[in-house]
Image (cartoon, rainbow, N blue to C red; front, side, top):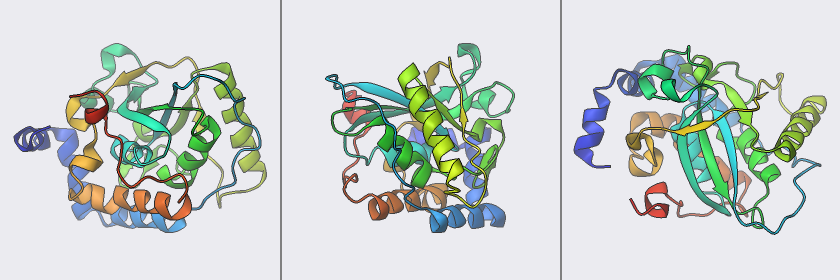
Length: 243
């Protein structure tokens, strides 16, 4: 992604709106800071996937703007690469400007490719619910609102669905958060990669005001709360794919 391409991307209605929120929306600034102050390492799931011999598995998660969620998981040990994209709708509507209208069924999501012999699916869910976003928010995260910013888990297998359902129920019963968990578990959804200019956004543009306010603190909380899971150098999609 070149600087000129990034600047041309800023002219896009959705990108401009998102960056402007970080600069002028006092509510958004407060909400971004509030989530980071309230981040907590919730207990690990008591039920997890059975250990296997495979070294490649995928998890699809939605927790607000995909820039920050992708940025967090790129710093997790055992993750091979992370793709920003859309899940919950159809291929025809899996485009940033269309999804931004909030009527496609899509959520901004990430597809995490990981080695289950190094990090389990349950551990990824623990990090997702602890630091990647606020799972008590309904159809919003920080300055962004709409169903496309909902909190959701898209299980790829029946085993992932079993683990996710049990974990959400367990945390809810234990009142792990100060409010009900809003995270939805949505099955039979397809993941569609987002446009190239969204990929590795946090790593490539760390000085962007939106990233500074809303997303870099999440990476800092990952390092603080999950030091044994954190790696300093992110694994970037552009490096993993050779593009």
